[in-house]
Amino acid sequence: MSRYKPAHLKPKRPWEFSKRLATWAAVIATVSTAASYILAALGRETAGEVTTTVFTACIGYLITYAAKSTTEKISRNRHGLDEDGMPISETERKENENG
Image (cartoon, rainbow, N blue to C red):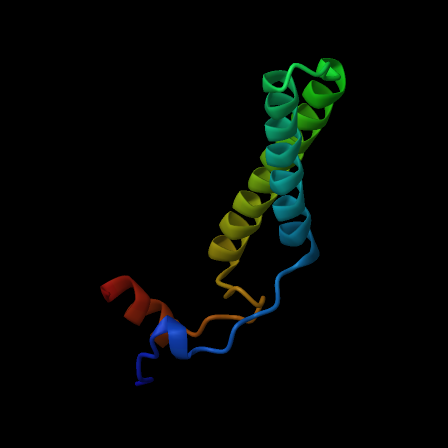
C-alpha cells in the first residue's frame, strides 16, 4: 500500500509547449483587447479589425487547446495511464476509486 503524498510535496512537471502557447494566447488576447479600449478612451483611433482578428485567433487556439487536453485525458483514462503515460497498476486504480 503506497502512502498518500500531498500535491505540494510531489515534484512539479514542466509545462508542455501547448500549455505555454495557450497561456501566451490568453495574455495576447487580454492585452490587445485592453489596449483597444484604452486607446478608444483616450480618443485615439483604434484598429478595430486588427484587434478583433487577434482576439478571435487567440480564443480559437484556446478552444482547440481545451479540446486537445480533454481528448488526451479521456484517452489516458480509457487506457489506464497516468499523466506521464505510465500504466497505472490495479491497486492504485482501486485506491483512487475508493477515495
